[in-house]
Image 1: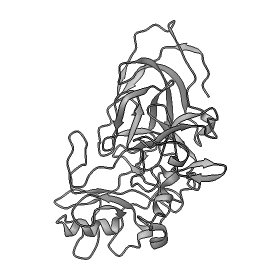
Image 2: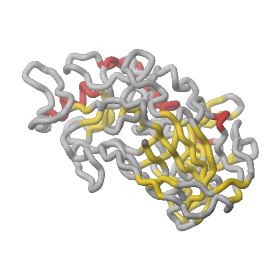
Image 3: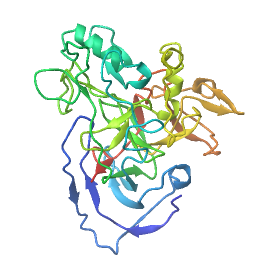
Image 4: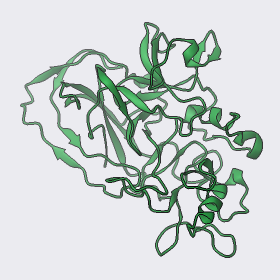
Length: 354
């Protein structure tokens, strides 16, 4: 864990990669403060021992939050794709199914927002709903189109580039906002304990949103059984809190585990404990699975302490025995990420990809 210390002011990165965008440009902005100047660092909630993947580097730098506060941030750089980059049993995937006869436990998942059978579902079912709504995604032989290009609709699955690194800026001293910040489509939420980015809703199939590539395209992004996939730039990220995605699969709302045998089984991910510490939000507050651990019993958060609109609350946790404000994954939401954040963050600079 970082301790209180003085360090030279370092360069800050700007630029944000988002799902659905192929823009990989990053700008480096040099701080012209001399290296003799230092910043005083207070201890925050980052602790490398709580992560299952260690960062390639960790520093503390000057930063400015979106509310205008000048403060200090952890600058954490992780290797990309630390939970795998080759589709296979026990790692990432599956993604786009070959046809409408592909078993659902061998197919990826998606969120369809059209008229026919909308919602979170197997891509086998989503493709059939899309085809019924006029999106030509299934050919005359029942094959599901994938890849892209031409006049059709497609299931989208992007290639991986594991030469990339991802750098996060997270406030060392979290500050509460005056009102909640709601996460936009594919908006950055934070970093998981594997060093993987956590993002908001995946791009819409039917509705275009300004500045978000891939939305309203008539194509559907494929998510694997842990709720992740590759960005067009090549880095894996999550649209779910994977520690609790099996809670969603086992719920009455979906019942994917009993019906189809679907579960997150990536051996790089601690998916068997839905009370586990899952990472840090970009405002510096911790994120946990769907439940609190009270005397070794999985307990819905509202029974531990009152939760707010972001599914967050304050009480002691195993990692923070003195008490901490923290978020929880949604118990049955799909995606199950917190819908909003209560703290301030480095606006549009919270993580960069190189």
